Amino acid sequence: MRKRILTGDRPTGQLHIGHYFGSLQERVKLQDEFDTFILIADVQALTDHFHEPELVRRHVFEVVLDNLAAGIEPEKVTFVIQSMIPEIAELTVFFSNLVSLSRLRQNPTVKTEIALKKELFGNSVSYGFLGYPISQAADITVFNADLVPVGEDQMPQLEQTRELVRKFNRIYGETLTLPEGKYGIFPRVKGLDGKAKMSKSLNNAIFLADSPTQIEAKVQGALTDPQKLRVNDAGHPEICTVFTYHQMFSPGIEELAGECRAGSRGCRFCKAQLTAKIIETLAPIRERREAFAQNLSEVKDLVSEGTARAKRVASETLNRVKDAMTIQYF
Ligand code: ATP
Ligand code: MG
Image (cartoon, rainbow, N blue to C red):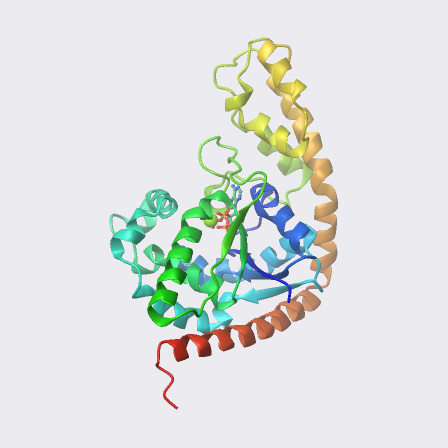
């Protein structure tokens, strides 16, 4: 039996280069070795997009297309739409008895996200948003995942999942698989603003589907070293967002840092060079995306079949969970 992966994305926007380097490339590499489930987390997307369900709906297949564009092969993986697996919601309810409110409030990623969503939540975050890590623990365990390839922002969620699984198994007996996290080479890609991580929702991303003109404009606006004002000023690549992107798109391009520090490399040239490299790297991805988008009804069939398979796995797990909890009555 091959080991299983659970990974996924929220359908809150198209996928970006942060996803490509933070998790998609890793998924593509692992799809041969592992039985890979890719969850399109629409229920989780609704925790902070409950007021715009159309946006979530629109991005479900966009996110599938981005995965396929990045090199995921349709016959190798199982795509799953989260809201179509009600067993996840059931398991979430059982898990929610095993975690305290103060533990949920300590999650550093959720804390940062709440601070960024002041406009939506005011001073009182919703029960659903505060609790999304519980639902994420259910996503992972309902499919008996062994491995969870994610970006660094998901590390606290994975820790919480492991705590929940251990506690469940301690109270009700060994029932659930204890998952492990796996992080890519660039687990936390910075946004164009140089501050927050690159996110679909923060308007600081280069999307996989961006055109060359869009890429050029975005790189132009990317934050560089604020102390390097003139072409020949000495720069500090270690704090420059553009330099981190060079490292992603041209591994081993270390001489560039020396030139920047010596003041022999201007930001304008540096950005033009990066723009060309990003356009070249994303071109085949955009092409594949368009080819799949031409066959959207086949893509939809694929997701529908994947979801049906996933539903069978989830239903078996819930049977075991209810047996363990002694709430199987007939
Ligand atoms: P949102 O702003 O809606 O939360 P997002 O850009 O954070 O969107 P998610 O769908 O939440 O994307 O995350 C999908 C996967 O991509 C997760 O495994 C996450 O850790 C990873 N990921 C997201 N952003 C980055 C990033 N900037 N660098 C590396 N990995 C990332
Ligand atoms: Mg996110």
